[in-house]
Image 1 (tube, rainbow, N blue to C red):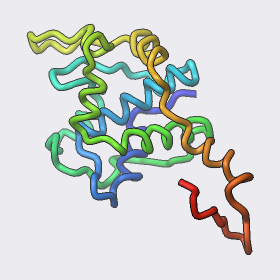
Image 2 (image 1 turned 180 degrees about the vertical axis):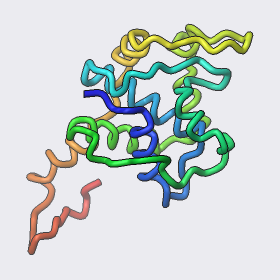
Image 3 (image 1 turned 30 degrees about the horizontal axis):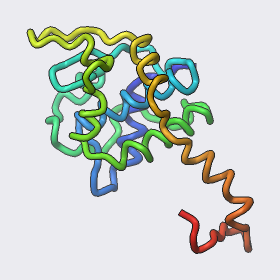
Image 4 (image 1 turned 90 degrees about the vertical axis):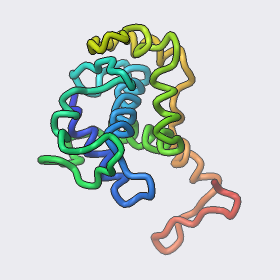
Length: 180
Protein backbone atom coordinates (compact mmCIF):
# COMPACT_ATOMS: atom_id res chain seq x y z
CA UNK A 1 0.00 0.00 0.00
CA UNK A 2 1.50 3.32 -1.04
CA UNK A 3 0.92 6.59 0.78
CA UNK A 4 1.06 10.22 -0.22
CA UNK A 5 4.55 11.79 -0.02
CA UNK A 6 3.00 14.64 2.00
CA UNK A 7 2.11 12.07 4.68
CA UNK A 8 5.79 11.09 4.82
CA UNK A 9 6.84 14.75 4.94
CA UNK A 10 4.32 15.50 7.69
CA UNK A 11 5.52 12.47 9.67
CA UNK A 12 9.05 13.90 9.79
CA UNK A 13 7.87 17.46 10.44
CA UNK A 14 5.77 16.25 13.36
CA UNK A 15 8.55 14.03 14.70
CA UNK A 16 11.20 16.77 14.63
CA UNK A 17 9.10 19.87 15.34
CA UNK A 18 10.31 20.21 18.94
CA UNK A 19 13.91 19.19 18.24
CA UNK A 20 16.93 21.46 18.11
CA UNK A 21 17.24 20.54 14.44
CA UNK A 22 13.70 20.78 13.02
CA UNK A 23 12.92 20.18 9.37
CA UNK A 24 13.59 22.78 6.72
CA UNK A 25 12.75 22.28 3.06
CA UNK A 26 16.12 20.80 2.09
CA UNK A 27 16.35 18.52 5.13
CA UNK A 28 12.77 17.38 4.64
CA UNK A 29 13.42 16.43 1.01
CA UNK A 30 16.46 14.37 2.08
CA UNK A 31 14.49 12.47 4.73
CA UNK A 32 11.68 11.74 2.25
CA UNK A 33 14.25 10.58 -0.32
CA UNK A 34 15.89 8.16 2.12
CA UNK A 35 12.48 6.86 3.21
CA UNK A 36 11.60 6.03 -0.41
CA UNK A 37 15.08 4.60 -1.10
CA UNK A 38 14.96 2.39 1.98
CA UNK A 39 11.44 1.20 1.15
CA UNK A 40 12.56 0.24 -2.35
CA UNK A 41 15.72 -1.49 -1.07
CA UNK A 42 14.36 -3.12 2.11
CA UNK A 43 10.75 -3.88 1.22
CA UNK A 44 11.03 -4.10 -2.58
CA UNK A 45 8.09 -1.71 -2.80
CA UNK A 46 7.46 1.99 -3.24
CA UNK A 47 6.48 4.00 -0.21
CA UNK A 48 4.73 6.47 -2.54
CA UNK A 49 4.12 6.78 -6.29
CA UNK A 50 5.54 10.27 -6.92
CA UNK A 51 8.89 10.60 -8.63
CA UNK A 52 11.90 12.57 -7.48
CA UNK A 53 13.44 15.10 -9.82
CA UNK A 54 17.14 15.96 -9.95
CA UNK A 55 17.17 19.64 -9.02
CA UNK A 56 20.39 21.61 -8.65
CA UNK A 57 20.86 20.87 -4.95
CA UNK A 58 19.57 17.29 -4.86
CA UNK A 59 16.53 15.05 -5.30
CA UNK A 60 13.18 16.79 -4.82
CA UNK A 61 9.50 15.84 -4.85
CA UNK A 62 8.05 18.94 -6.56
CA UNK A 63 4.64 18.49 -4.90
CA UNK A 64 6.21 18.91 -1.46
CA UNK A 65 7.86 22.16 -2.57
CA UNK A 66 4.52 23.39 -3.89
CA UNK A 67 2.77 22.69 -0.58
CA UNK A 68 5.47 24.60 1.31
CA UNK A 69 5.91 27.35 -1.28
CA UNK A 70 6.05 30.04 1.39
CA UNK A 71 8.91 28.30 3.22
CA UNK A 72 12.49 29.20 2.50
CA UNK A 73 14.94 26.31 2.19
CA UNK A 74 16.61 27.11 5.51
CA UNK A 75 13.61 28.19 7.62
CA UNK A 76 12.35 25.66 10.18
CA UNK A 77 9.08 23.94 9.36
CA UNK A 78 7.36 23.12 12.64
CA UNK A 79 3.79 22.26 11.66
CA UNK A 80 2.40 19.58 9.35
CA UNK A 81 0.53 20.92 6.33
CA UNK A 82 -3.03 19.86 5.59
CA UNK A 83 -4.67 16.72 6.92
CA UNK A 84 -2.21 14.40 8.62
CA UNK A 85 -2.88 11.09 10.34
CA UNK A 86 -0.07 8.71 11.29
CA UNK A 87 -2.54 5.82 10.92
CA UNK A 88 -2.21 5.91 7.12
CA UNK A 89 1.04 3.99 7.55
CA UNK A 90 1.29 0.25 8.04
CA UNK A 91 3.34 -1.05 10.99
CA UNK A 92 6.10 -2.01 8.54
CA UNK A 93 6.12 1.50 7.04
CA UNK A 94 6.22 3.11 10.50
CA UNK A 95 9.18 0.95 11.44
CA UNK A 96 10.95 2.00 8.25
CA UNK A 97 10.15 5.71 8.74
CA UNK A 98 11.40 5.54 12.32
CA UNK A 99 14.61 3.80 11.26
CA UNK A 100 15.19 6.49 8.61
CA UNK A 101 14.54 9.21 11.22
CA UNK A 102 17.04 7.66 13.62
CA UNK A 103 19.66 7.24 10.89
CA UNK A 104 19.22 10.57 9.07
CA UNK A 105 18.75 12.52 12.30
CA UNK A 106 22.42 11.90 13.08
CA UNK A 107 23.55 13.88 10.05
CA UNK A 108 23.49 17.55 9.16
CA UNK A 109 21.53 18.65 6.12
CA UNK A 110 24.80 19.20 4.25
CA UNK A 111 25.94 15.64 5.06
CA UNK A 112 22.60 14.20 3.93
CA UNK A 113 22.92 16.13 0.68
CA UNK A 114 26.39 14.69 0.12
CA UNK A 115 24.83 11.22 0.52
CA UNK A 116 21.99 11.91 -1.93
CA UNK A 117 24.26 13.64 -4.45
CA UNK A 118 27.06 11.06 -4.40
CA UNK A 119 28.97 10.72 -7.70
CA UNK A 120 27.49 7.88 -9.73
CA UNK A 121 24.31 7.84 -7.65
CA UNK A 122 20.73 8.21 -8.93
CA UNK A 123 20.70 12.03 -8.66
CA UNK A 124 24.14 12.45 -10.22
CA UNK A 125 23.26 10.13 -13.11
CA UNK A 126 20.45 12.38 -14.37
CA UNK A 127 21.32 15.85 -13.03
CA UNK A 128 22.16 18.36 -15.72
CA UNK A 129 23.72 21.76 -15.22
CA UNK A 130 21.28 23.43 -17.63
CA UNK A 131 18.73 23.77 -14.83
CA UNK A 132 16.17 21.41 -16.38
CA UNK A 133 14.94 19.02 -13.66
CA UNK A 134 15.09 15.39 -14.79
CA UNK A 135 13.09 12.51 -13.32
CA UNK A 136 15.06 10.07 -11.15
CA UNK A 137 13.78 6.58 -11.83
CA UNK A 138 12.68 4.42 -8.94
CA UNK A 139 14.62 1.53 -10.45
CA UNK A 140 17.88 3.52 -10.27
CA UNK A 141 17.16 4.48 -6.66
CA UNK A 142 16.36 0.87 -5.79
CA UNK A 143 19.40 -0.69 -7.47
CA UNK A 144 21.78 1.92 -6.06
CA UNK A 145 20.51 1.64 -2.49
CA UNK A 146 20.30 -2.16 -2.56
CA UNK A 147 24.05 -2.12 -3.28
CA UNK A 148 24.72 0.15 -0.27
CA UNK A 149 24.75 -0.71 3.41
CA UNK A 150 21.11 -0.74 4.53
CA UNK A 151 19.83 1.66 7.13
CA UNK A 152 19.97 -0.20 10.44
CA UNK A 153 16.75 -1.59 11.89
CA UNK A 154 17.02 0.35 15.14
CA UNK A 155 13.54 -0.40 16.41
CA UNK A 156 13.59 -4.12 15.65
CA UNK A 157 17.12 -4.50 17.05
CA UNK A 158 16.15 -2.68 20.26
CA UNK A 159 13.07 -4.87 20.76
CA UNK A 160 15.17 -7.99 20.14
CA UNK A 161 17.65 -6.93 22.82
CA UNK A 162 15.00 -6.40 25.51
CA UNK A 163 14.84 -10.08 26.45
CA UNK A 164 18.53 -10.16 27.31
CA UNK A 165 19.14 -6.60 28.43
CA UNK A 166 15.97 -5.36 30.06
CA UNK A 167 12.99 -6.30 32.15
CA UNK A 168 9.47 -5.07 32.87
CA UNK A 169 8.89 -3.95 36.44
CA UNK A 170 5.57 -2.50 37.62
CA UNK A 171 4.56 -1.89 34.02
CA UNK A 172 7.75 0.03 33.21
CA UNK A 173 10.67 -0.95 31.05
CA UNK A 174 13.92 -1.17 33.02
CA UNK A 175 17.12 -1.39 30.96
CA UNK A 176 20.52 -2.42 32.21
CA UNK A 177 22.98 0.43 32.77
CA UNK A 178 25.14 -0.54 29.79
CA UNK A 179 22.24 -0.60 27.31
CA UNK A 180 22.69 1.87 24.44
